[in-house]
Image 1 (cartoon, protein in one colour):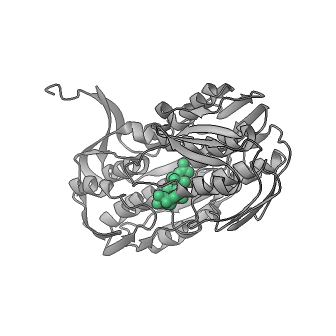
Image 2: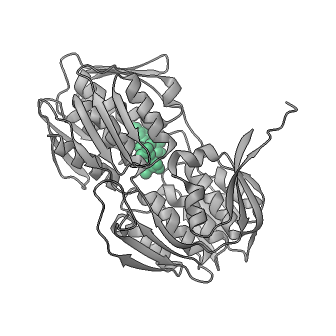
Image 3: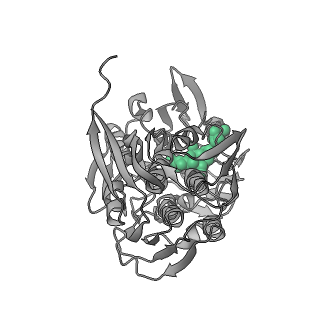
Length: 439
Ligand code: UD1
C-alpha cells in the first residue's frame, strides 16, 4: 500500500493556522545539546518525522530522550561520554544528521558520521564542513562512506573564510568552535534566523559568540557548556508556505507563531503579487506556539500577478519557497521568471506541476512560467519536502481531483498538513492506495 494526499479543488484557503518551531533549527538545536552533559529541554518542537529521526540518532549516541509531540517539548539527557558514530541507516533518511559532526568533534574530539548522498534537489557538497574542521585542527578523512574526524589534543581556534555562506557548514563550525581553545572567526557566515537561534541557545549554554546575525561570527572557546532550556524559533518556511497558499488561492489566512520580520523578501514578493499583508499582534506562549502568538495575515488577490524571484542566502528569497513561487506564477496573470541560485537540480517539481497544466520552461537555473487561467487535477509525485507541499498547493489551485504520492516527504517537514489544510477549508484526505503488483 502507498499513501497519497487526495485534494478536490479549487479552494480559496481561509482561517487561522499556528506554526511551531523550524525544522531547520530544531534538528541542529537537538544536535547542539551533545555539547553539554545533563538534561537540556527544547520547546516549540514541531511534530514531524525528522524530529523522530533525530531522537533516534541521539538515542544511539547514548542520550535518554523524552519527546512529547503534542506539547512540542523534547528533553535530552546527554551522558558524560556519548558515542561518536552516526550510522548511514539514519543519515540516509535525513541529511541534517551531519550536524552532529561539529558538536561531537568539539566535545569528544572524535566522530564518525556517515556522509549523506545527493538528493532530489542536487549534489549538495560538504567540502566546507570538512575543510573548516581541518582548519580547527581536526584530521578528517573519508573512510567507507564515513567522515572520520579526530583531534586528539582538542580543537584550536582559527580564521575560517567560507567560499559560500553555507547554512550547514556555518552551524557545524560554530558548534565545533565553542569548545575549542582560543578564538575562531567565521567570515562569510550564513545569517539565517535558524543560525541566530542556534547561536542564542549556545550562548545560553555558556558559549561566547559575537556577531550573531551577521556574516562575521567570532567565537571565543570556553572549557565547558551547561545544559539549557530553549524555545525553538518559528518555522519561516512553513509560514511562507501558508502565505503563498493564501495569496495563490485568493484566500485569507492568518499565520500565528512567525513574525513577518523573518520573511523580509518574501513579504515584498507577495505584495507584488497583489496580496495584502498585515501584522497581527499577540503574546508568545512559553512552550509551543498557540493561537495567542503574534503573526501576520495574508489576503490574496482575486487573481495574482506574476512575480520575478531569484533565490539567495538570507536575507534573500529562500530557495525552500521556490516551488510555491512557481505554483503561484502558474495561475497568475503574466509571465514570471524564477532564478534558482542555490541548488542545481530543484526542477523535478516542475515536471509534476506541468502534469496539472502549468506552462513552465526551464533553461539552466531559470524557470519561466506563463500563467494560465486554471490548472486541472492529476496524479503527481513528490520528490522532496517542499516539492510535495508545492504539489498540494497545485492541487488546491486545480479543478477536480489531484493525488499527490510520496507523502512521507511532506511528513518530514509539515506537521498535520492535512488537518491544518482541512481547518482552512481545503477538501483533502490521506488515502491508502494499492501499489502496482505486476513487478
Ligand atoms: C539548509 C537547509 C535547506 C535549505 C538550505 C539553503 C537544513 C536541514 N536544510 O541546507 O532546507 O534549502 O540550507 O538555505 O537546514 N555547499 C557546498 N559545500 C559545502 C556546503 C554547501 O558546495 O560544504 C553547497 C550546497 O551543495 C548547496 C549550497 O552550498 O548548493 C547551499 O548549501 P547549504 O547552505 O549548506 O544548505 P544545507 O545546510 O545543506
